[in-house]
Image (cartoon, rainbow, N blue to C red; front, side):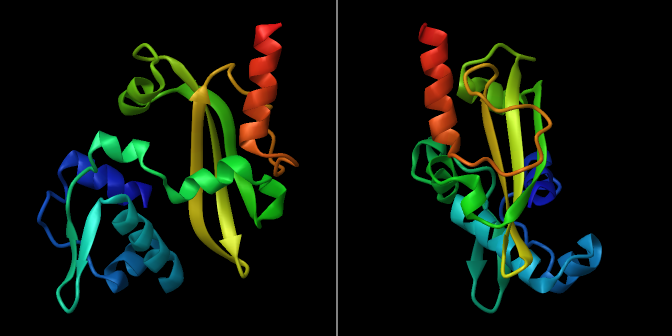
Length: 166
């Protein structure tokens, strides 16, 4: 999904162009059909692409920034304990934020943001990648931790903000 997003942003797949077929994506990325279908569904839900019955999937371009303010499926991961869903933590680290993320978080260019990336599974199959970014230091999440958190991300943020106020 992220590779397709990067290709759309880079102009490899310009707005209005036809995306490769599911079979082509399966071959290119070496993943199962459900994984490709799930990635394309998320891209459609987020406004990156649109589907036309019998014609294929077409690029719309990067969604407007205002879409970040609309409720998104990933918001559920902020309030539910990570341990309540199947999956594994792929990455947990403070990294230089991409320009778009830095702008959304109010960071200076090249500012660091905490990234927590988790591969979520359903029925034993990976279904989506959840990437959460926070202003570094605004949330208590240990770097490098590979286990699901017992509490929610949102609860961790509240605890950390209370610590900062003291």
